[in-house]
Image 1 (cartoon, rainbow, N blue to C red):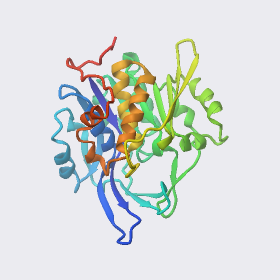
Image 2: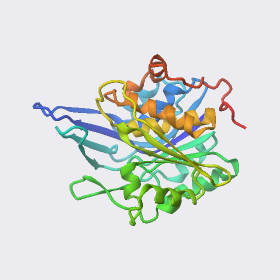
Image 3: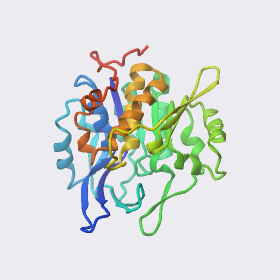
Image 4: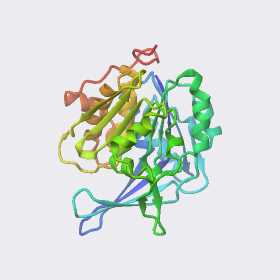
Length: 325
């Protein structure tokens, strides 16, 4: 199994609401996606991340991930500026935070991506919102269309603007239909879904619009309340399934849960070719991530899930997805 991962790396600076004004700093963003896959896939599989890292952070990042034999680091490149930095200010009120983004990296150019489109799937996670341009997405679609390679697309920060104080805020996306066109699976939070269009469509109306764009699976995540999955079959019939929220203990930090959800979904989908089976697994993986402090605690994710009784498809042994035609 070979999965290409595209999206910006982040250097997360977390400000905790305590008297000491504690700060915690670690790599995040697309790293949550990459490490989720690395811990679920076998050493014979391959993850191909494509993103840039600031000059001063490159060696440190490579040192952190080189323990994984299934991560091909050749697509990770140095950039002249700083690594994209995300400041997360947690409020004393439960489950609330202010997000600020600085030093956002330039969009990843298609010439950096093209040579890595030879695998079994492509996962695009719009970590910063400017990870790739719409033109680059079109090039990716055209490059892999004839080979029927699935694309999983997480809208993430694509629906966010930035104000003068670098704070992120939700705003409608005028060309959202072009972004959705011919994607196998789309992921967005319920906040992103509500604010996606200028018309502020309700979820049912938005779903009907999205699925006419040749989308097979739409997933709307609801944080601790679980997720909704809508699947379109070859006869254009829509089937919906709601997955309730799961708790594996006190939630420490929701950061990265959506990234883990998307990676776990795509992994299990390539094994089962069933979006509902994949989403049920992804819901559990994301719930476990909520009990972690940072992306590094994803180490041993497969074992941690198995200890909780979560059924996981066995790693591929021949480099090809199970049930792949």
